[in-house]
Image (cartoon, rainbow, N blue to C red):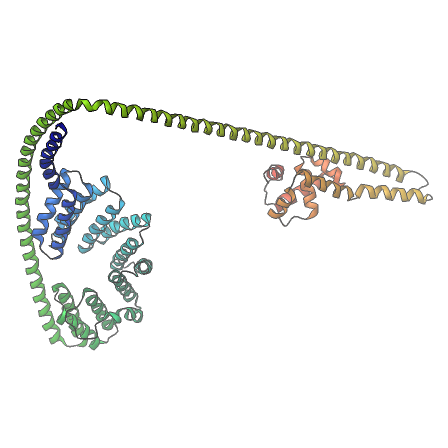
Length: 550
């Protein structure tokens, strides 16, 4: 009976809670934003702004940063569509602040692009380039190929406006391969590329891009890309003095475009065409049409300005209503909290009534506690095994270091033996040289052919290379790969150079090396300098230090 009472109490509590949760539901906020965007695309700006302001207020109250960003950004887009660029910029900057502080770079680059488009519309190309570049750099960091291509197109259009044509060409060439799956955007890139070619004077290449975009069948309404293509083709043929074709393209825009700005540009260009053809009367007539188009454009702008101010007034009223509703909601929440407090007291009373179930719960806790102890023991065992493994690894590492030290000592010992052998060769050569000198100085040398033969043998022993071959064999065994590494780094060294380097590597003095090679100390120093120069060393005294690093 007590359990049934508890369930019914939870149901009674859940009813007001669920209604509050439903009102502040995240999905509801997302739905408001989606509906607001759709209404904006349908030019229903008042209704769009009402929904977006409501979504903004809901997101702010619940700290939903993403939804607050989307709502404010699209509020700015509404004002941009209504030509209120100042109000649009204020909202974009507010969205940008939220993106930097609370969201990731994806949202930052979206609003940066919007701000840049607004500056581009205002003909502030330096500011537009600055914000497009920031968005482009973020897209590069995120490796978002579609966004990279999209922002590259915008940067290319700005560069065209600033007459930075080579820079613009690089942006379009980068963007086109990245946007092949998006026909509308890649078409914009091709139009920018064509404009770039026109500005460079490559008219034929520009026409190759633009002519496929010109409608060939019966025209009902021109698309924006077709209007741009026709305007560019008219300017190109005008520059080529092809007056008839230039006039045809401009007339096509005037007849089939519903956009007043496009018609105005076409009228102004058509006036220039008639003036160039010498038809001044027709040029004046077209100029009158251009003036009428300017008047119509100003009327539209004034109408939109009135509509914008009206929408602002209605939105302010709507915000005041939201504020009043929030105050009412706060008072309702106070009542709700009072009811909730009473419900908690009732729950505590019911908990006391359910005390009998505590014993079973306690038993479950004991079982759980023992399970936890078993798990703790298993974890300690795993930790112990891990420590043993780490200890074994450290021992292996220490053993490896000791083995490395032993090998190093053994190499040094063998090098000392080789040095001793080399010094022995020095002493032997000096002794043999002394004996040869004494024998050559003795009397009766001319008569003693055997004595002369012995002298030749002794001289042969002094200059013999057999000891060198034996020496180099032992040297390679001790210093494995040293000579091979030297040859690989310095292929210009010959055998005598390598022999000299081996003695230097053994840290023999110049005098000792000269004695081994049977040359003077001066000649030995010169050879050392020559070999150092071959190895691109400016100071021959650094040769030993350099060889020690190979």
